Structures are given as C-alpha cells and as structure tokens.
Length: 157
Length: 157
DNA sequence: ATATTGCTCATACTTTTGGGTGATTCTCTG
DNA sequence: CAGAGAATCACCCAAAAGTATGAGCAATAT
Image (cartoon, rainbow over all chains, first blue to last red; front, side, top):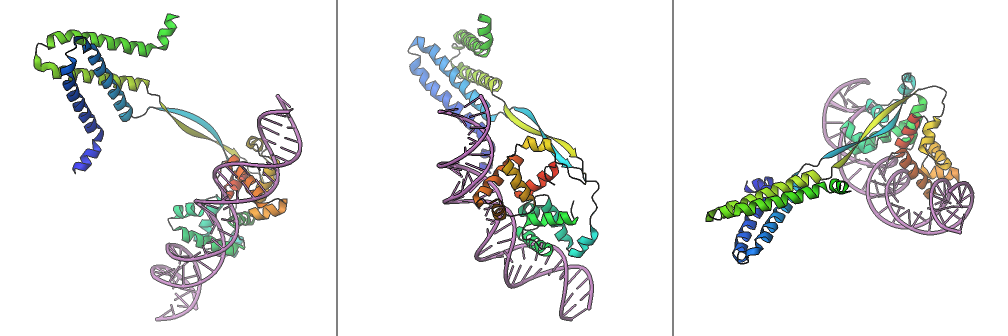
C-alpha cells in the first residue's frame, strides 16, 4: 500500500526530499558564509545553479519526449489476382481436411509455424502435426515444396 | 557580425541576462526581507522555485526532439497475366547479383539449400550466404517469404 | 455401441535453416 | 594501384522445421 504509493509518486517524493535536504544544508552553510560578507553573491549563484540543474534534470526526466515524425515512403507490390479459380477437383482428390487447407493457405503466405499457431489459436505442436499431414498428402518433404505444388495444382492463389 | 553572434547564442545570452537580473532583484529584496528574520526560509524557497522553473523551461526549450519513423506503404498493384512477364524495374531496384537471382529461382521451386548447392556445384555454405543476402535485399526473414514476395513483385514466375 | 475421422497437444529427437563473422580470390573501376 | 563488389567457403550458434509416437476428445458414420 505504502509501497505502491511510493512507486507511483517516486519522482515527486524524491524531488521533495532533495529540496528539503538542500535547503537544510544551505541554512547550515549560511551561518559560516555570512561571516564573509562578500561571499553572498557566490552563495546565491550556487543556489541558482543547483536549482537550475535540478530543474533541468527533472524536466528531462519527467517530460514526455517531443516526437518528430519522419515519413518514409515504401513501395509494396501486390499482385492483382481477380481471375483465380480454385481447382476443386484437385482439392477434393487430395482429401485435405478443412483445417489442413487453412494451414496450407497460411503456409503459402510465408508465415512460420509459430505465426500460424498464433493466427489459428492453437499450439505450435498442432501446427506441426497439420503441416506434417499436409506434406504426406501432397507427397512433398518441405513447406516450400508444398506451396509450390499447391500453386501448380491450382488449389491456392 | 554582432547580430549573427547574438542570434547564434540567443538562448545562452538571454538566460545569462535573466540570471543576472534575478540576482540583482534578489539582492535588492534581501535588504527588506532581512528585516523579518524568519522570512529567510521563504526567500530561499522562492529562489529555489524560480530557478527550478527556469531550469525546467530551459530544458524543455532546448531538448532535442526524438525522431519517429513512420513508414507509409505505397501499394502498387501488378497486373496478373497468364503469360508471365518479368517486372524488370522491380528486379533492377533490388540490385540482385546474377548468382542471387539464380538461387532465388531454385528457391522458388522448393529445393533445399543442400539441393541448390548440388545443382550449382557449390558448397552448402555458399548457398547459405546467397540466401542470406537475398533475404536482406528482399527484406524478408524466411525462404517462404522470399518466394512469396518475389512472386508478388513479378520477378519470378 | 463401436469405429472412424478430425482436431488437439505433448515429448523427444534430428535435420534444416538462418545469423554473424571473417577470410580468400577475382574482376572491374576510378 | 587501391578500393569495391561478387563469389566462394568455413565455423559456430541459435532458431525453426520436420519426424515419430502416443494420447485425449468430440462429432459422425457403421
């Protein structure tokens, strides 16, 4: 409870303590500095400097950094595939389960197993099982071949 | 000449003047404030506050803004034609070496690095070097993505 | 009611891929 | 001639992919 409060207002509390301490030290220093009458200016200068520095420090610590937005244009090529027709016969002949087809499509976009697992809300192991079965049914050994074969068969865009 | 110098160190000069002025005012105030012996603390507090504020102000004024890069993607739709025509501009922009292009094409057929090495009569390590450079230039992380991107850009069939 | 199929997940192990670094050789260019 | 870029290769480490096997669960077909 106290800890949470402290953590939340850490900066403010620390700053307050630092200020109090400094004032105390200065008050004490004052006694001996006042003996030398001309040291007053140096004294004030010191106070000014210290608190200016403190202010700068606090400002840099607390201030939300200004952001300068730099816009970089980047060209993205996207193939226009409006005339793709899925080869339903070939797809049916493969006897892929719905889930496997889904995985195959994500596979073709270049996603990793982990990324596919994330998209489908399943574990990495599950995706591995699906891909393995997929490779079996497509009679390939690697994901790259699976994509290539599926593309040639016309079952993915 | 003086003007240029002033403009260049405007902030420093202004700050210096402000500091001097404040010290002068305080020195003057001191005379009457010292009469009330217990006003000393208020006096110091005022100094501390003012210079802290000054420090904050200076810091906020001077602080270098952080840059934030925003990538704006510019979409280019590539016409999908049944007879493939290589997108020469895109290919040239990528600045791929002849060997890298060769590797990319074999990559797209679904071959493993070892198989590519065999086809090109080079070592597996060499193929790895090529693929790595390829991924860099295509701005991708995996071979599957490389193939997908190259296909969308129209630099492979 | 059993068998099958699809989906899920795990564990354990091997292979492949990718990242980083550095070296060598050759060729082209200023 | 020095420097840059391309191609070659090596070594090491880490991450991703793939293989094998087993198992639980729900819907569906027999």
